[in-house]
Length: 387
Image 1: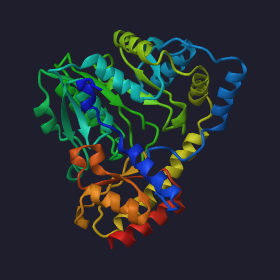
Image 2 (image 1 turned 90 degrees about the vertical axis):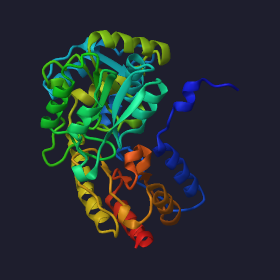
Image 3 (image 1 turned 120 degrees about the horizontal axis):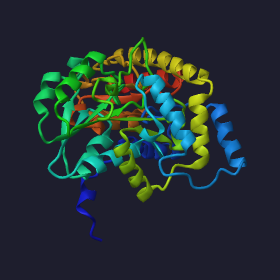
């Protein structure tokens, strides 16, 4: 079978591959602690579930408009206006089955051969994968621990040129958990100010999962950048709705029409009754979100302290999301070698830093979307292997 050339350029998301390996080991009777997948381990709040169930019972089981129902789009526009401090209208919103299609569609709409796109590295692997798939040149924005995983602005400016058509920002970031400061966002905007053909994809999927007063400052707030920014957000992380598959992009109306056309050609629309759950998520009580974030904060402190107690590990404290990204260079092993050893010998599933790009070598990513009991047990098992 002859495949299209672009297929050979597609990457993958290693978390799902490691999950499959871990499940296979469990099927053989091995005890596995799952710290590999970026999925909140909490149930979706009951009020959200009830809204979707009531919607099904009311007969909301048919097609909806491709970019989302008017009610859903208005709810999202109002929410983003409220949380970002920038006014958006329903016509700026495109709802998709999960947030990942916004990455996919944005890159398909904006990039082609000869273009360049800058993306965080280490960063969410689908950025680089989709840039390569589109035939554009993927230009990494290195995030280094010695710089507290901040963007080196001088290096960033050096790599921006007339071929740069897209810059991807992610704050709080996966896998580092670090936020981009308002000062750095404004500096990035200044660098890109005169590059009018360059758009910004601002991945803000973890914007509600923040600690110690950290802020998710959106570049859409900077003067002149509202219409040049695609805000990516969704419901999976904040509301523990990973299986519901609901995400959205906020963008200028011209691009929204193009992204809607891509929706028509691929998914038709987002699940009808899921949209009722999304409306309830944004308009309903937020107590469960606050409880979830507080619990993640508790786990964050425990896992960072635990990882730093392991010989050869050095873990920075994340500002947001639910990932710890320790350097493991002191162990003398590379990332893939140690990740495999922990899975097969210790029963601890995590991800090699190289799953997030070349600059992830020397690191592991642990998701602390698991119980304190399991996190503590994982630390004990890792110590047994490493020490």
